[in-house]
Length: 259
Image 1 (cartoon, rainbow, N blue to C red):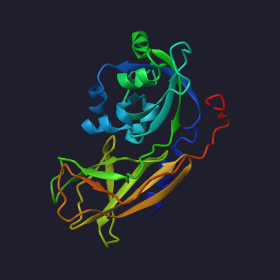
Image 2: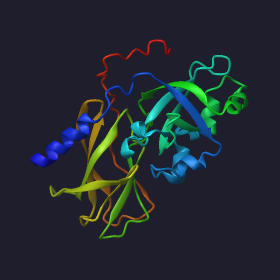
Image 3: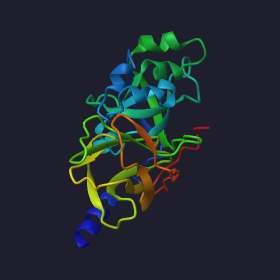
Image 4: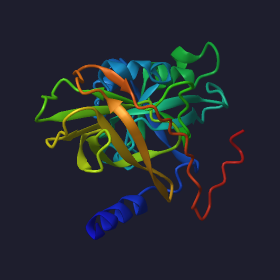
C-alpha cells in the first residue's frame, strides 16, 4: 500500500496545474484527418467522431505518455486578417514528433481557425502562429465508455480503450475487479488511451480510475461495466461521467484578453 501511495503521489504531482493558462506556439496541419485517427492514442476511426473531426497531434508535453489523449483545447491563430478571434476546439488524438510546432491539426480544424470564407487562404500558409489553452471536454448525455479491443483474449488478456472522457482531466491509474469483489488487479497503460492486464477476473467486471485535474486527484468507481460474456469490438457504457475542471496553480495565468 505504501508503494502504491508513493506512485500515486508522483502521478498526481506530475499533473500540470497550468493547463488552462494561455500558451503561444505554432501549428501546422495534416491534409487528411485519417493520419490523426491512426495516431498514438489508439482511437482509430472512432477519433473522427470527436470534436467534429477537429483533431490534433500534440507535442510530448501535451501528450504526456498517453495521459493527454482525448484532452480538449481552444486554439486560434494570430493572423488577425485571416483568423477569427474565437478559433476552434480540438481534441488530442496523436503524438506530434515535430517540436517546431506544438500542434499538427487536421485540415478541418486548421481551416476552422479562419474567418468565414478564408479557410483555403489559411491552408496556403502551412504553418501559423497560434495561442491555445486547455478547456474541459463536454460530452452531453454521454458517459465515459470502455471499448474492448480486438487483441483481448478471454480469460487470459483484456485490453480496453477509454472513450468520451469529459472535464479537464487525465486518467493516471486504473484497476479491474469482478463485480462485487474487493480483489482489485491493476491495469497498465499499453499505449495512448488503451489499458490492459493479463490478470483478468472472472465474471462481470467493474473498474476504478484515478482521475487528476490540476493538483487534484480522486478515485472514480464504475461499479458494473463489462458483462460476464464481454465481446471484443464492443463499446460499453461505464455509467459514470467525468466533469472535473482543473484548479489553477500557476504563478501567472492571465487569459483575460481571450474573450
